[in-house]
Image 1 (spheres, rainbow, N blue to C red):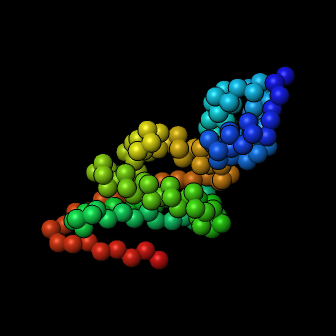
Image 2: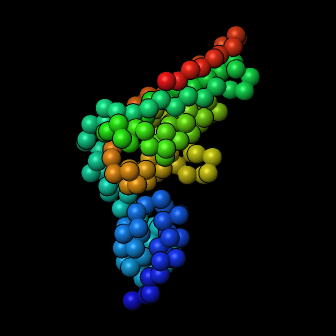
Image 3: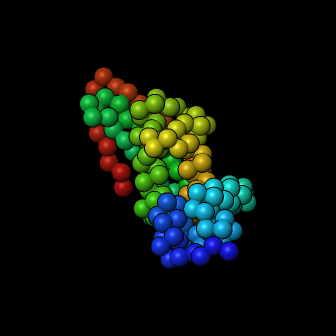
Length: 158
């Protein structure tokens, strides 16, 4: 059995954003191989997302992005199970990133958004599953829209 050090666990935590014990268990199962442990956690996140898929997502947030020229904008509704997660920084940033993606890639529906690729090269659906693993709740992309105008757009999000 490989020696699992605190620094190795920390490195995996930094890569995945998951809890210490989850990372330690994955490293033990992967015999100390950080890449294999990360892959293992990715597989587990998919399984966890599948188990969470039937749970109701009634809370959430809106991601909003307005283009620099103020001629177009995008809104994305992302839902979760509790208001606690809806206020989580990672969840809010996920919604903002999706709004940016909707704006820049001219996306018009949630299915197309789920199949899109984020700026870091990761698939939106895979990132959503990893966020479910990290936050422990079902997360759904409910809807998105993009709007363009000849005038100027302004925004306010409360």
